[in-house]
Image (cartoon, rainbow, N blue to C red):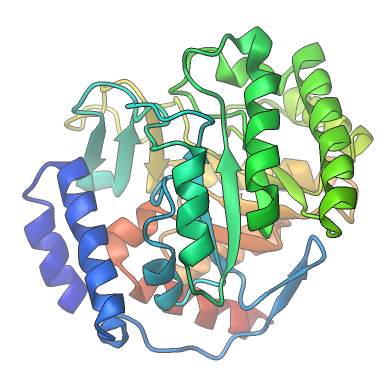
Length: 340
């Protein structure tokens, strides 16, 4: 009820401004000990994935906390893990505003943010001072002015900088809002990127005395042959996990709605079925011991269970949190506990 009242007020404002106000409010509630008004601790079974023990199977997807400014507030809501970013080597403003649009009739969001962030050095400072029991994933990408042919250099910079501070690292090659980025999902470009990153990961593990697993985040706009090709490459290069999926370029299910024709990636309920099918296809194509983290359209505990039944080990939410608030986390945890 409390969140619903706040949401109704916030939805009258510009989407990006209201997100910032909401996150700032959560930070203030966490600092003053009022987070319990939004979240009551749930009994949850730990989950062992990628060699890490997650307090529960529910995580925050990348994109909401791009700079690591809200780690403690997100953790206080009950997430078992918080993925921050996408962060780039250098700060960049992203695309011109407005660039974030709600489609409330469909519980969808369209964004063309364009990896707006304060740069990896700022994010690292935020991680250093954060006090949290949640595991922290750091999602890295390339700067928009870095040619796709040189993208590997940006990813290597990002990996080197975040490695000592992350529980796991996500390689984002699937955002539709950085020109050419999705081409890195295919062919020789993908192989060269993964080879370089795995070699660097091995070197960093020796330097730091610990192995930080590396996940790759993929798009939902893949056919079955493309899924098989990706799975083969992930298997050959021994990727630690797959995150499925990012936002979709499709407008199926939102045709005719206000803002539906805005450029950008669509997330939320409209992507649920497409994203879950990609999870299912990857589960068949990947080795049994390569975990999948499912993101895309989770609006209820039942949606999360559907992802697990499709083959995922963990789930992440973003748009669902915007529409349903912290109660969604509790609903998902309870549904997963019943399933188990």
